[in-house]
Length: 395
Image 1: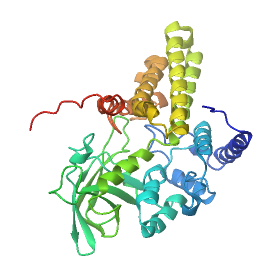
Image 2 (image 1 turned 180 degrees about the vertical axis):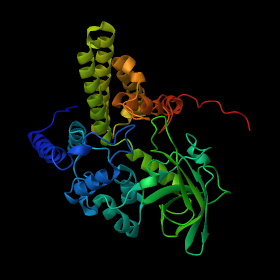
Image 3 (image 1 turned 90 degrees about the vertical axis):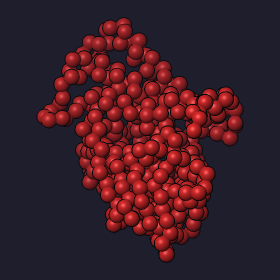
Image 4 (image 1 turned 60 degrees about the horizontal axis):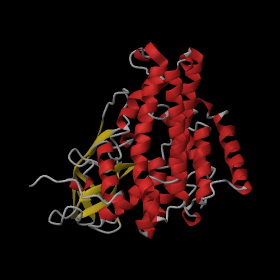
């Protein structure tokens, strides 16, 4: 396994680095490094302008095939792109759900009409998306969804509730898992619908988090309607589409995530040097452990991405979410420990948090969202190790 980059790939690295540095040190300097974990509310208008500038310059959707408006970059160049974006401290992307989740899903499962309608607006940053999966009684057990949709002429009529819907309050569209056949078995009778967030009957209620911000929302559908042709992958075939979409969640952008964590560790290390904590062997050991874990994360991610067609490497793939969630939570704890007593004092009134406080509070959720640690361990045991399923209580 050769993970070195070629001279052509290093030339591409210089190209994207120069492009990002040029923008982030001039007209977009104010949003450099903003909009990340716990800071997702910051500079919405400016970050939307950034999203559209990337689209206009052809730097969104870099892995999409060229026939759908992307750059068609091979995997190694996608990795370089996300690495350099994180290194440059590019702002938190508003279009990542459209670009990284629904876009590839429409390319694979959508109709020609759906692709032509939605992909250009995603690529240009003109339309933002959110994900309607989780419900109060259907989080880790996603197939337990109760939100339903019924055909009424040429429209679907939706009733139900979604929760933890990231960026719903800013989104133009939502892709929603709904039950369209209540008589079918649990994993069947589910459809994958697209609906405008400003449709009558859609209500959005922000959920205030520990950080004081509201990245997540509750979304209620009370007779909301969407055209009948906005079902993706066929009626009652939504579970297959939903699982296909989740596969895109662990793509090349995970390398960018690793570099973002590296930037956080660099900030923690500089703070430890400045306030004298680095003289304490206990803190030096924790900093060294964090660096080692980041290196392990990077090489395992590269191994999974470069040899994804080898089934014997499925084990590391199952471990990925569990590994980075615990690592990021520990970085948040390390940050406030290095900061010391100052971590107990907010930066401003009434609830202006420091970067350390935002990271600490936000990362408490890393081990829950996207599949809790407990569920991830079940997946590792059952799918990765072939162990018997966890015992289920009798009905």
